Image (cartoon, rainbow, N blue to C red; front, side):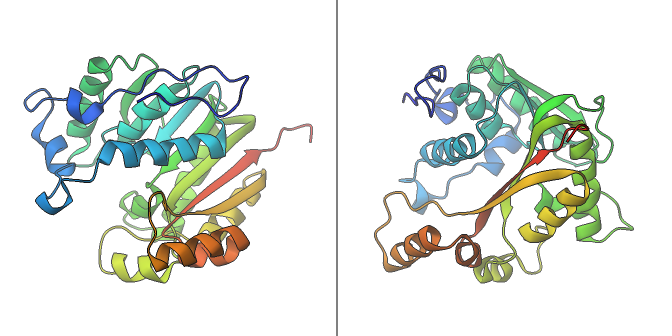
Length: 269
């Protein structure tokens, strides 16, 4: 599969590797296969194609350049795909230091990056509340499906306080004029609230995040609903498509995911 960059002047993306076909059992910790296990009834679904579509949409939304930090990268598949879709982008992926599976995740990410020659990807274990980088180190800092797990960070903080703490640390690392971005489950979606209730994964209020980022010195806040409708012709998908095109606010009430981006103001502005 060859995926081409979004603009005519952008460098052409390298051929995207077939990650799940490249990784053989035994080459990575068993936890990788436990996490990405495909049930028999879903075997016809190609997880790679869905992930490439998702990461391509993130690329098109952010147009990242320079260096990017992905907070809460997990096994790093999305970060590896992003490095192929944006060949001039360097991606550092960090996952939490105290998670019981974190070492498995980062070791898997290192093995996979070597297998597919993702030379611009660097995996790292770190505490999301105290990231080991100097201020303004990155052009883009992104959290993909991370803030919905942010309550792990501090036992004495509730979910939104933990999210604010993580956003403040992410904001510290973005250079002036750079982007901070969040892609996560939307608490505005009734479907998500029902599906996530009682679990350790909590939907995120994108409008609350926008308010926090404005206080942290960001502007040009964009919040877009996200729903993968490729190939779907059912009534629910048709209705979703109409609402997503007509109104972002209505779309967020319907879409399970949202994409948020804010630009860090420079000191002179």
